[in-house]
Structure formats: C-alpha cells, structure tokens
Image (tube, rainbow, N blue to C red; front, side):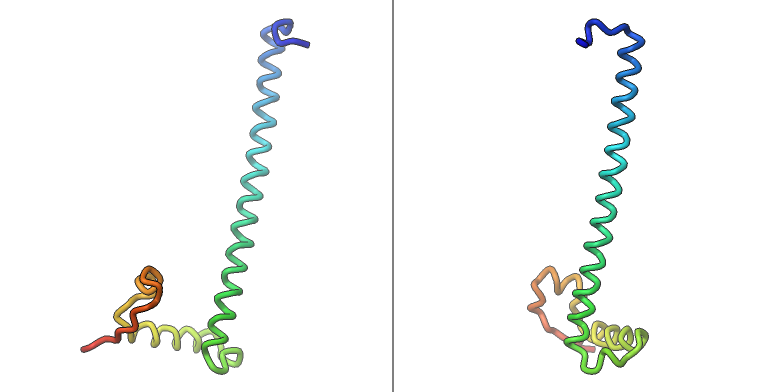
Length: 98
C-alpha cells in the first residue's frame, strides 16, 4: 500500500516500527563490534605472550611476577620507552648513562 494512502496515525505507527527495527539492528552491530574487539585483544595477547616466551629462556617455568620483574628490569635499563621504540621501529638501543 503506498504511503499516501496511509492515515497519519498509520504512518506514525510504521515510522515507530522502523525506528524499533533500526535500534535493534544497531544493538546487534554494537554486540558484534564488541565481540570482534574481544577476539582481537585475545589474539594480540596470545601472540605477544608467545613472543615473550620465545625471548625469555625458561619463561614457561616462571610465574607471572617473575616475568613482570624481568620485563621491568629490562625496560627500566633503557632510555627509550616501549612506546618510543615502537614509534622509531625499535632501532634505538641506547642505554642510560647515569
């Protein structure tokens, strides 16, 4: 039925139904986006953990606190922060001169 034949009340009802459908679609899309973000984060954490284990001898046998201590010691002995190293491609290996 063409819209011109609908009464104003029917048009309002149809518009409300359309809004409801669009809100539901938006809700579903937001859920999918959050799920994808969780999957991406999980993948990133797994990959980075694998990199860490490949670089630290015996990492699989160490507890989380020991791994954290090793990383803190390694990172605190550098002038370049991890963020700065990432921005420069990790090419700077300068150490502190105190």
